[in-house]
Amino acid sequence: MAVLVGKKAPTFTAQAVVNGGEIVEKFSLDDYLGKKYIVLFFYPKDFTFVCPTELLAFQKYLAEFEKRDVAVIACSTDTEFSHWAWLQTEKKDGGIKSVTYPIVADTNKTISADYDVLAGEYIEDDEGNVTVEGEFVAYRGLFLIDKDGIVQHQVVNNMPLGRSVKEVLRMVEALQHVEKYGEVCPAEWTEGADAMVADHKGVASYLAAH
Image 1 (spheres, rainbow, N blue to C red):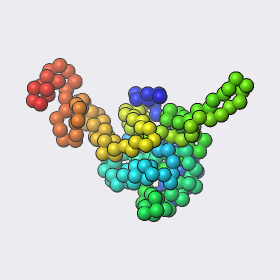
Image 2 (image 1 turned 120 degrees about the vertical axis):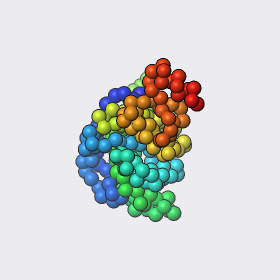
Image 3 (image 1 turned 45 degrees about the vertical axis):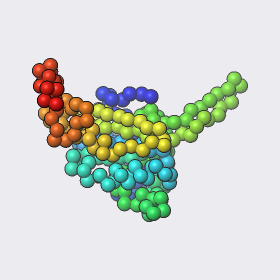
């Protein structure tokens, strides 16, 4: 699994569904770089079990991300038409109706591959026959990208393990605190709590106070 933290986030242009039902042919990550922070998260499949809980949870906290100048973008290897149909399906029927942030269609699986979250692999035997082990779908990868296009945080879960959206929001707050004040954030730091000055004196003062 590649570590992208500290590196430029791979850019892409692909089909996506935005505003809960509008299909865009050339949705590009470049449109956000330099303008907003980005939370880009991958999930395995539309019309499944854990996935709608995550997408709906991000929608629940979308206003909190937006007021911190963060664009939330989802991505899976399903087609834009599958995304569209899922967005039209009521929650009681397993759908994600009400989700408004973009959902990218990584149909060619190149975006998932670039972020190194694509499961499945080709296996070739001694006679040159090729089979596939697993499914070519995305793990639950998440990447926090700053306004310069640099990945500042990433986490990758296996498919049965849902993520904490509150933790993603905490990481956004921590990044923005570091950028604004030049302090570093200790374990379990939350917005409004004391941070640390990154020198021996500052660290010692923080530890003495806690």
